[in-house]
Image (tube, rainbow, N blue to C red; front, side, top):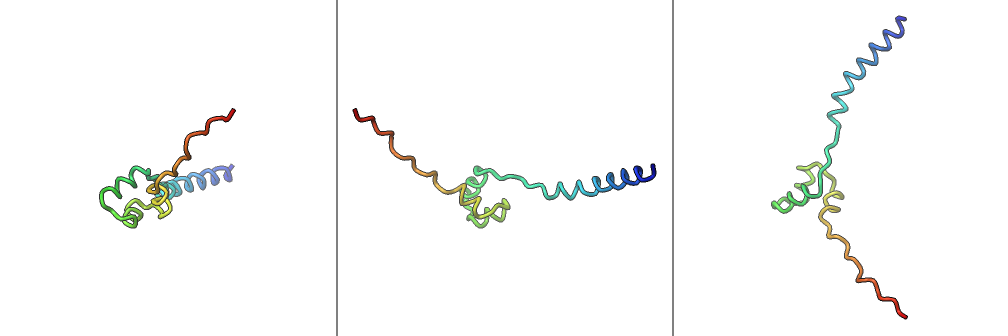
Length: 78
């Protein structure tokens, strides 16, 4: 019976101690709109990376132009 009580106390302590640490590492997602707005406001890509804590790849993917679509479908030949 003592073992169960000790295990409950250990688990409770682990949960209480671990929760703030896990919450501190929770990552907020930054939308492409936020990145584009920051760049439109005159910030450089490097400043956006530092301020919003995003990678260079994320900034590049949000600011790269959308790939061009190919022309209309060709009509069937009969």
